[in-house]
Amino acid sequence: MNAIELENVEKSFELRGGQRAPALRGLTLAVGAGEHVAVLGKSGSGKSTLLNLVAALDRPSAGRVRVGGIELAGLGESALALWRGRNVGIVFQFFQLMPTLTIAENLVLAMELVGGVPKAQRRARALELLERVGLADQAHKLPSMLSGGQQQRAAIARALANDPPLLVADEPTGNLDSETGAAIGALFQQLAGQGKTLLIVTHDANLARGAQRVVELRDGHVASDTRAAA
Image (tube, rainbow, N blue to C red; front, top):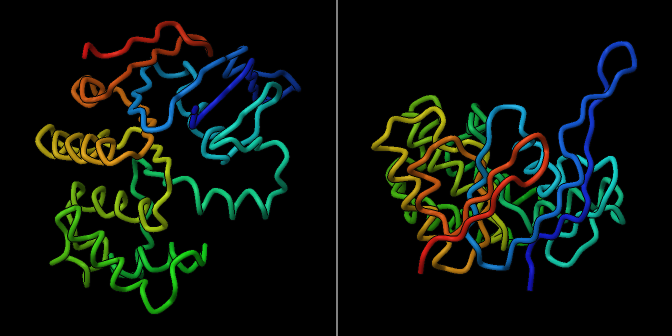
């Protein structure tokens, strides 16, 4: 079964003067459930646009986007937000943790917004996830008190708060040193081994090497699609 299916997807953005800039041009891509896929490409190749469509943060100009068997075009905005919270964990390059909440409270908030985890279990689940990413001892701290690598691990834990089947990440090691980046890569491989589907946009060659499959975008379409040797 495919976790992600994009068929002849077009996406363009309106510029000043009424002109439109194409970001994706007839892109077709399928990602199987449980696959760990890295997406490479130069700036402007359409990587982040692809990720935003898969995560339902944006809608295509044309074509079909199906995630987890759901046709996203058929969902209204409120239904889409609820679907996203339950099915997709999103990791951003700049972490986007709530600065006035502790790390544990950031995870609890993610659960509150979706409502899939009973209230009485949320704090314990937050601490369990922070333990999983090596941050149990930082649970009481604000994001500003953590290093960049720690904040990114906290962001990954938050993305897992509602146990989504799909995890997407946009340049998750872009602001990290090589050692911390390698630790994040190892964490992604661990998650893939546990059955999560991962779609990782990156410029980091080391992070890409940890994936089962590498897709390169060029000018808004798939230029190459390579699977790692078994």
